[in-house]
Image 1 (tube, rainbow, N blue to C red):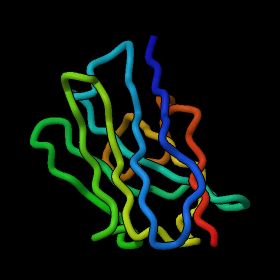
Image 2 (image 1 turned 45 degrees about the vertical axis):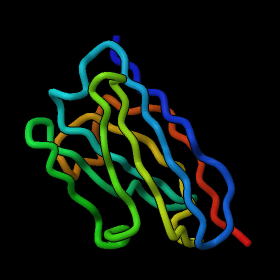
Image 3 (image 1 turned 180 degrees about the vertical axis):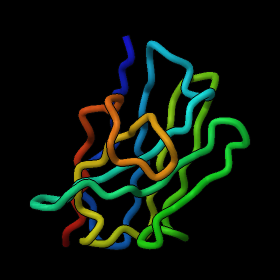
Amino acid sequence: EVQLVESGGGMVQPGGSLRLSCAASGFFLGIYDMNWVRQAPGKGPEWVSGINRGSGTTYYADSVKGRFTISRDNAKNTLYLQMNSLQPEDTALYYCARGAIGTTLTLYKGQGTQVTVSS
């Protein structure tokens, strides 16, 4: 059974940092394209970042480029999102998703972890 479990969210002040984790089970995430997606209250899902299954090439939405870093640890079967210089507009439910780079529609996603940026 494919499972994705996110953790690491919380409340931080503007300018702060968080590191999200996504533990995968039931499949080896190293052979799939993986993404981080977020959804703010009252808005649709927004693709944030992706990592290519083979080369490990990373991709970012313009809104987070230079502040967020996606990575994976194949030995731990875990996907990460390092988020720096957080701003209030980054407040959202963040979840990892298995699928083509850039996708927000997939059957394989976790329940998400809440990130709130507020002073």
